[in-house]
Length: 340
Image (tube, rainbow, N blue to C red; front, side, top):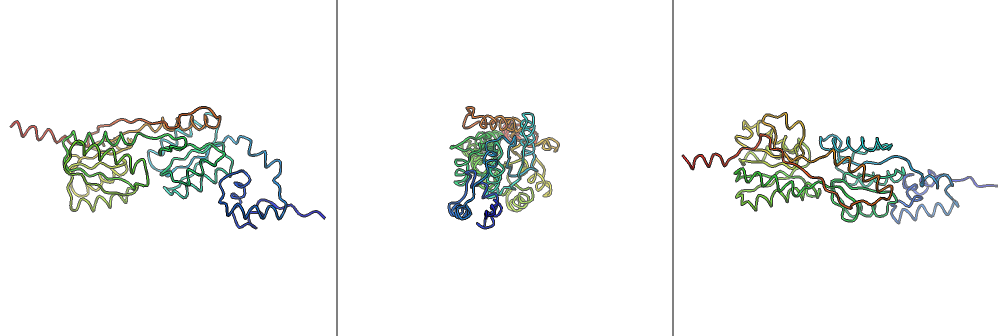
C-alpha cells in the first residue's frame, strides 16, 4: 500500500516552522542550521522529494521586483518609490512593496519573504547594513540592491550625505552664525545618522564656529517637536540645522509656538528638498537630492543585475543647496555696525 505523499505545509507543521522557511530550504535561501536540520529530518522520515514542477519554478522569471522601504509616507520616500515603480512598470515588471517602519528585523524578514516568493530581484531602501544583512545578500540566489546605505561588499546606490552635510554647515558658518544646534537622528542609520552629521559638524569646526550643540531624535515630527521644545527652554541658538526637512518643519513649529520668528530669531536649514518647504513663509533653506533620478537608477541597476550585466558597485546621487529665505545673514549686521 502506497504511503500518502506529505506536502510542504505538513513538513512545516511537523518541523515547527513556517511554510516560507521550508520553501527557502528547498530554494537554497537562508535558513538557520538548527532549523535546516529539523526540516531535513522530517524530509528523510517521509522520503519527500519536491515535484519537478516545483523545482522548475525557481528557474522561471516572475517579472516581479520586491522593494523594501523604511517608510512610504515621507516626501522623499514617496518620490523615490514612485520613480522606481514607474521605471520598472515601463519595463514590464510588477513591484511588490513592504513598509518596515524603520524596523531592521522587519527588513531581514522581508528579504527572506521575497526569496520565498521567488521574485526576480530585491531592492532594499536600508536604514542600516548589519552582519545578518550581509549574510543574506551573499547567500541569496536573487540579486539584491541596497539603496541609501553604502554596502562595500555588494551593490548600492547612495546619496552624497557627507558632502551634503558639509555644504550645509559651511553655508551656516559663512552666513555668520556662531551658536548652532544640529538636530540629528540615531547613528544606527549610517548615512543620515553618521555621514550627514559628520559633514555638518566638521564644516562648523573647520570654520571655527565657537558654539556647536547637538541633539538626537528619531525621524518623526512629534518626537522632534518634543526634543526642540525642551532644548529651547534653556538655549537660544541663532541657527538650527536639522537632518531632514521633516525635522526642520518640527523645529519651525516649535520656534513659532515660542513666539519667535524664522529667520530673524532662529535660522533653519533642512535636508530633502520637500515641495511643501517652498510653501512656508519664509521658504526653507534645504539640501535637495535627486530622488527621481535615484528611483530610475535603482530600477535600471536591479534589471542589469538580473541580466548579469556589469554594474558599478557604488553609485552616488548628487545634491543642490536651495537657499530659500530661512537663513539670516548675520554678517550684514556686524559689517554695518563696524562701518557706522
